[in-house]
Length: 351
Ligand code: RIB
Image 1: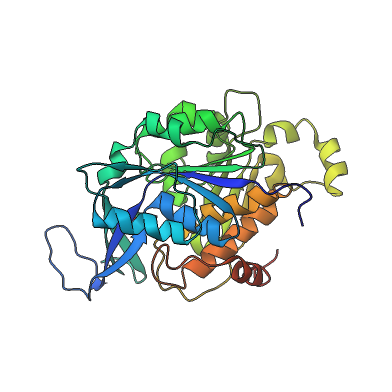
Image 2: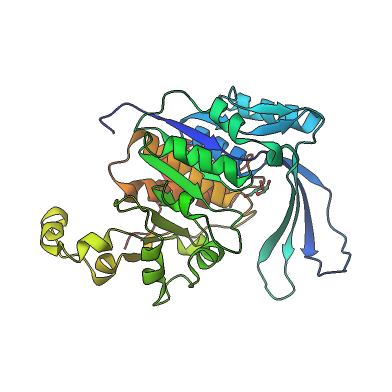
């Protein structure tokens, strides 16, 4: 149990209503396929992360924008029912709330179910830096964790990261959806963790996960503040999470100190700053992967808000949470509770 006071999780991001159709095969361009009944779920990367964090035991504060329509009212009510503080949110007059059109089915090439998502951002795209500035809690403490994802305008993310960075000890940037031309340097300079999936990692660094050039590319992403951030946690679904750490810049020089601290010699991968399988995932029966990344981020932030002394434990907690989410339907609906995550942690494969 942590020895320090529990912090909060502050989430800056989107809220959507997910309109989901399952189909046997996803359509190709120009094709029409028939699917099942339409399912309506609460979604949006930011709101999903907020619910994941709340169910994982955190005190959560959400900053985002809703339209003045029935979807917006329903999505806000969902969050408030989860005990999430939405007082920093705004309602945009005459604007529709965010909607995501999601098709789930097998792709033409693959045998596994995948998803296609098109987002109509609506109010999310109208969030402004002034809204974020006004919505951010006046006081942020080192034990608070902040998560930002990229379904709201970049100038909002920039202000959120800049407000969070000097004060919160755990600033997480979830680069989703990841722009094809990489991230603004100012983002990299103002976060402790970046949490891409494999595709996002490749867009971010220009190198595939685990490739020989990836370590060098990651070092180039280091912040301009002389600190060993950002750490990159690559979420790889059933393969768990790989860590690309900036600490290698220190480790090479300071192996002796590290041997003393760890009580063992660091592995070559640790010295190089790349730890594949940093946290391993259990085998589970997959029902719906939509929101699994959001679940990882929310649970990670929740853990860090009450104990950030061992990052490895926080990542294992988040992997356990995401492994449970994929067994359930719906983004927010499928987020697991803390007691379930702690139980699942015991089933994680150990190296
Ligand atoms: O990450 C999953 C989310 O992406 C969905 O809930 C959908 O709303 C889109 O934002």
